[in-house]
Length: 125
Image 1 (cartoon, helix red, strand yellow):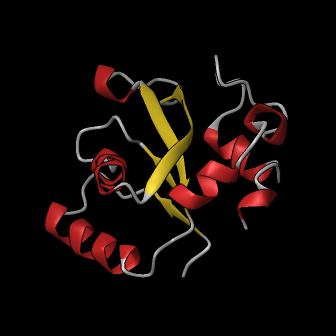
Image 2 (tube, rainbow, N blue to C red; image 1 turned 180 degrees about the vertical axis):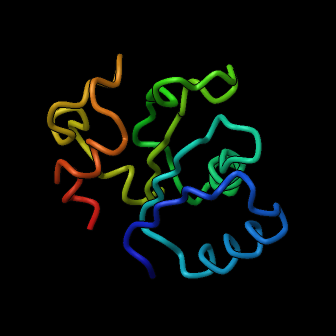
């Protein structure tokens, strides 16, 4: 199985190409999945929904960050993300907010990029 998969497709990727790529990854049973741009048209939000309905993964954390300075399209001004783990791993996770040092589940004080770079996710390896 794979350790962590980061899903951040280009919004111009053809849906059928992205779906085929995801099925190949899914077959390798990733332990955890970080999904960026879950709320954008053409984004990867459907992967989170699929994993939820298959009951193979559970959401550990969600958050959002801005779409960047000068982004004029209101649909792109906020970028949402989710981190999921295989259901059996998610059940074992205790004290999530202490594990994600500096991350506040209520207001997402760290961006997705900062969270990934912080090394606070070591327990997912």
